[in-house]
Length: 371
Image (tube, rainbow, N blue to C red):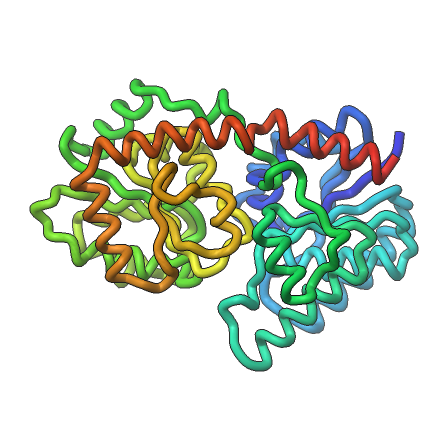
């Protein structure tokens, strides 16, 4: 049985994106995982069907000494274990894994691009981060992106060539339509738990809480809505920039930590929001759509694949707080139309992003390129 190894920086990445693919491929290959276990989300990898998990100190931020030490360790590790293929996800993991794999002579080196950090940067930092993505692409023997609009963007910016691929219509692992299935009992129970009355309209964001994701824009737009509108804003995820300290004084805004059951917590809301400035593919958007939630999102590459304008959701230019406010108010005043878009969203996900379809694409990709 051939040995393959996935390399990611965070257990959260492994759990959120690779649970389905790893469990699918483990029936055919011996699957191993390299991940940084200095993380509060370590318990999330327990459900992954891997032969063994290895700890490598792959950190998100640039640290020349620690990154070089991690690279040296990985080169030695790859030479010792002789994997048939390696597959990285996320920028830092991609750089260290693809460089380590190249030096140690691993013939099949796969990287999946899931978004570009440099899009919102400027000057030297932007150029340096862009160069890293180009280097990852050059060092890889096979390149995937998790969305078609992202692929077009990367080709246009000369990061990848036209040989790069998208599995199916996009996303890494698709959505389990059985798991992400709207259930009134779940919604009613959670809304009762949070003391949400029947007439309150709840907006929700789920993901990492940081400026690049448009969280500040969403909060500022929401605060412009009059209190008489009877609305709430749920912000669910790791608060990476301590936003809670600044905005927690408004009782209409509720900050919640990372939730291991998005299929449940999303059911609390009436409209799902992703006002991000950069996104490779909106996984949380298709999860919310599968739960029949209408979407309000920024009109950027990556999200273009997940929202059909005025059919499954509403779009606005990233950073336009006034337009975002207008769309939030539209949602409150047009509940029937929003619920219709939510139903359309479920149909859109079933047609394009079901887990069953995407995992079949994974199997075919590995059969054609790794066997």
